Amino acid sequence: AGRAAVIGSHWSATKGEASPSPSSPIGSPTGTDPAATEGGIELTLYAIMALVNLSYCQAEVQELVRTCGGIPLLHQFLSSPIDQLRKTAAFCLGNLVRDSPSNARELVTHGGVELLLRCVTDEEDDELSKTAFSTIAHLGEPGLHQLLQLMQDAIGTLEKTGGGHSEPDPLRGMPQGPGQPPDQPPGAVVTMREALDEICEEEFDETEEQELAAMQQAHPGGRQQPNGFPSERRSPQSPHLRPEAAREAAVAQLQLLLPVLNGLVYSHDLHRQVCLREGLSQLLALLSDAAPLLVHEQALHLLHNAFFDKVHHAA
Image (tube, rainbow, N blue to C red; front, side):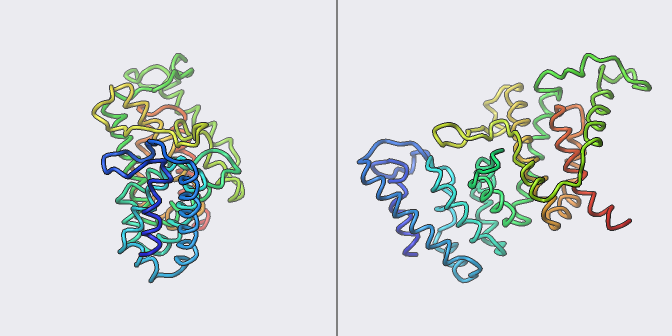
């Protein structure tokens, strides 16, 4: 409780606010004495690091932090403009949710999965990205269920907005393939065949380190801005978005979370089993013409990793 009080008392300082306001969005600076802000940041980091050490494999501390309201408090630091605060908070949350379904559900309820996804980038040496991915993995089934729900929401948006590719597809103008039904749009079968050929030609004997590195490739909207803020994205289901903008947001969401799902499925058998049991229909839906080619490729890669271990052991 004491650590939570210290963290809470200095949350406004880390944001650069003169005083906390319930109506003020996270990360909206109003300006204060730079020295006071610097001191607040340092003290907050010490407090969070103390929680990191105290909560490691300590179920009692995990429960105490949850009952004291520490999880939503730490969750706020994932939106901090200060990279070190975001990384330390993600690390601490990873310890708090590890082997603790109650804490995992608490973090998921407060939007932790979405903020952790924003911390994942395609930079191999990005410690924040690695920590955020590890914390998502520690969330276990609650975190995976939320990822699948986000994927379902994005798929629903693509279907509601009439499908089609959100970006020009060079294969669209190609002649119809042999045996293509006349009611199919030109190039539809060719598009799928091209995606399948491209995936099948890849080598799938990469090491775990290489696979997890590939997990962080090209996330449109997922890169951090030069000022250290995570890229802002509106929900694909926002009623304020025009159909085209909603479709683009849905595609960006898929391109962000599919590589993360792929890394989870590849490196954690529990996630692979749950994904096959509860997310297979969604993954197959991503192979429809509603999604662009890049999403097809990511979905095929994910399906391969989800089925590979099962087929390998069955043989």
